[in-house]
Each structure stands twice: as structure tokens, then as C-alpha cells.
Length: 611
Image (cartoon, rainbow, N blue to C red):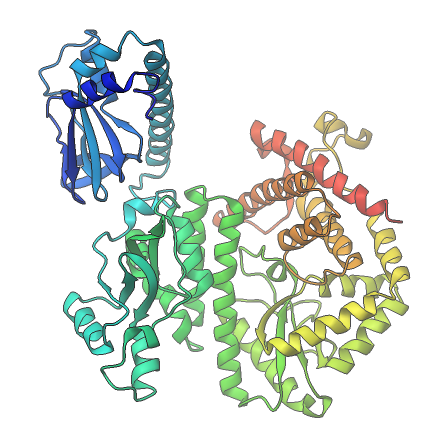
């Protein structure tokens, strides 16, 4: 059924196939060598092959060919007689990335097919697609290499960085067998499979906590102690996808799975070693940091951020990854604070607000957080805990909040009942000051603590919001004083002024955040990042799927421009400012900003229409 043979009589297909040669290649076996004269085209019947070039002992993969693909298009020039070859100018080689079945089609077969216009159309389309991919890849590599002089990049496929020789064991193996195999191979994890299908993973931590820690016998089967809910990734995902997933899930080993089969594994150490060993060591110190080593973590995260911005990782993915790292840092600060004040006397929950609560913090700014606990009788303990948290976060590089919106302050900690009274006060007496407090509060995100207490807290908030129509009205009235500007007229004539700048934070990001926040509150969505709230608004049919996608894209464009602007100020040791000069923007950035502001203004208009 391949396009090359479609429409031919079965007898003719059989004659053509008889002239071809069917071959099987095991993983890493050479399919075509460099400087090997090509005798025809190679049709990949099954598996995945890599086209690569070898230079000074280093293999650079140029292309990944999947099932149904054809290898050897460059030899068509020889077949057509437009290029003479002695087979010595072939610089690339082809190998099996996994077990491959191929059909080697000599030029004699292609000659017999050549008069079929369908064959012409198919080959022309395939060559055009391949040529486009090669040009795009080449242009991107040259751009990156010239701009950064760096041979490694976050924008490389997992296929290129994974370990292919995965050490595996069946479900029935014992933990003793696993330990011996891990020791012999000098690895810290072993993949558990059933005929190449992933069943689980067993790590050194699992052995310590679930075997030694529970005094289980060494003949315990691995199925009993392995981790079953395994985070996996596709080999066609990117380096930064793998790193982000590891940070998010808190794992250091990611099996690479496609079509239900284990294809390889990537480890945190390998990923970080490819970028910077000293950075790897510093980031790994997060979980073991003390007051003296906490400041080092900030430096390591900034190095990682610089690398991602340099490698042009999509800004949403960049923020997602950095947020997970900052969360780990905050959790370490919490752990150190709890060590200082002792075990909590009751259940509690810790929340972040502001840019951290929104998942948009890329540089460490000031602290914005609060505490919720069960009973007011333990207020003295949580007063001490709040102060300890602020102290540890300050050590880690977070400045104290100038507005004192921190858990060390009595106004930002309390029992469930205290918070209920506090929110009631904001809603009933909706002064401008109380509205500003509420706006900051409702940017919160649960970071640590008892999940049941957190659910109770949020349910309490929803019940209060059900009776808060006047509160919503006042929030919207305040937002009407901060309408998002549009740049559809010449930039310098906005509002009839000779305008040359825009405050990205006050004029764009805050109105966008508040529009999403208030729309969410009206519909019972009390927490989450702006992107998470947009997804929930879409699920509730408040925003159409297409408009929700447009809003997310617009917000990502604005954030990308804002973050690059702020980062450039940081690198140049210039005072931090959210004011952006139009003269410093590229034409592309201006176009993106114009379109993005129109979309965000439509979102704001949808909010205004409720009142």
C-alpha cells in the first residue's frame, strides 16, 4: 500500500519486490555508510533510522526517518544523470536507531516505476518536504552556533540525548537481582518491563525506603516495591521538555517510551552534564541546602534561565520550569524554618502570591505569601513559623515585601475562621485599599501543607464569593480605570500624545491578570495560574476554545517581550523597570505587541460586559 506501488497490478508488484532486497538491521547497525556508493533508495518498513555526520569522533544527527520514510533522496541526482558520482562525496551515514526492517530498491525498480505520474508526484512532494526540513534545521543550527558559539542546545530531540542501552528486569526478578545489576552497571535505576512494555521503575531510593527501610527480605519481587506511576517522555520531545518534566515530577530518571515500548532512558545528571557540571551540582544542592548554601541556588537558577532564554525555549515552558525550581527552593526554606521552630501543632497550608503565585516569576523579587492553619489557639507557633520562613527566604535571595504581605505579619496569617472574617471585611467594605489587598490575595497558589485543609479553605472562599456581587462590581469598576491600550494607530499618536513608551506591568500585565482573575472568581475559580484559570474558563464555556487559545498566545507574547526586556536590564546591571521604549523593539516585537494587546483588550471587554 506504499505510494510507490499503489495502483499497480499485484503481479507487477511481486515482480518489482523480487528485484528488491529485504534486510533487517539491529540497533546502531549501519544501514548506509559514508562514502558508500548508493545503488538505489531504501524504504523503511519498520523502526526508526538516523541520518548523521561524524566529525572528530562526534556524531551529529541531521535527520530522523520513521516508518514509511525513504532514505537516499540525494542519490536521485545520479539516477537522473544530472550529477556524476564515484560514491566518494557521500558525507552522511545512516544507522538504525532501533531494530529496523528495510526494503532496498535498486535503481532498476525505480526505472520501471518512473513513467507513472503518481510516482513522480510522490517523490517530488517527499523531496520538497525533506529539503524544507533540512534548510530549516540548517538555518537554525547556523543561527544558534554563530550567535552563541555553543554546540549544545535546549532545542534538541530527546532522541539525541537518551541512553539507548536500557538496563531492564522482569516483574518477577528479586530486589537482590536488581541491586546486583545496578551495582554492576554503575546505575541508580533499573526499568521493569514485560516484553519491552514499561511496568515500572526501581531506583536506589526505592531500595533504601521500601526494602531496607521496611526490613523486607532480599527475595522480594521488584513488582512489590517498584514505582508504578512512572513519568515518561517521547523520543521526539525536546531536551527542555525532559528537564521540565523531571523538575515538575521531582524525578531524576525518565524512561523514553513510544508506541508503548521502552526505547531508552534520560537521566537528570546526563541532561545537566551536557550543559554545565557545576550548575548540576549546585541545583542538586537545593534539597540539602542550609542557611550558608541557600544563596548559591539563586545563582544556579539564573544560569539555567540565561541558557533557556539564549536557546529561545518557548517562554511558557521556560516559566513552567523555573517556577518548579523556585518551588523547590521555597520548600527547602520551609523545611529549614520548620526545623527551627519544631513540629507544627496542627494542620496548616502555605501559599504564594504575586508573580510566584501566577507562575510568572523569573527573577527573585520580594516575598508575597500567607499561612492558613486550623486553630487560633496555636497563633504563637505560626507567628514564629512565619518569621522563620521570611528569614530563610531572605537568605535564599527573596527581598522582604515592602507592603509587608508576608506570613511574618499578623494580617497575612490566621486560622480558617480568621481568614473568613478577613475576606468578609474586604468584600463588605470594598474600599480601594481592601480591593488592592484582595487582588493580591486572589493571585495565590497552594505550595505546601495539608491538602484537606487547603480544600476546606477554598470551599470556604467559594461560599463567600457566592454572596459577593457588589464586591465583583467594585473590582470591575476599578479595572475600568486601567483599560489596556491599543497600538493600532501610529505608536507616537496614541491618545493624541507623543508617546514613546509603555509600562508593560501596569498597563498590560496587571489588567490582563485582573481580567482573568475576576472572570474566574465570578465563575467559582478561586486559584491557579492565569493559564490554568483560562483553561477552566474554557471548560465552563465562559471563553470559547479558539478565543482562550488566542488569549494564552497573546499573554505569552507579552510575557516574552517583558521578560527579555527585564533580563537585559538585569544583565546590564541597570535599574529594574517595567517601562519599555518602542525604539528598542524589533519590528516583529511591535507587530506581536499590537496584535496581543488587541486580544487582551477583547478579554477585558468581555469582563466589563458582565456589569
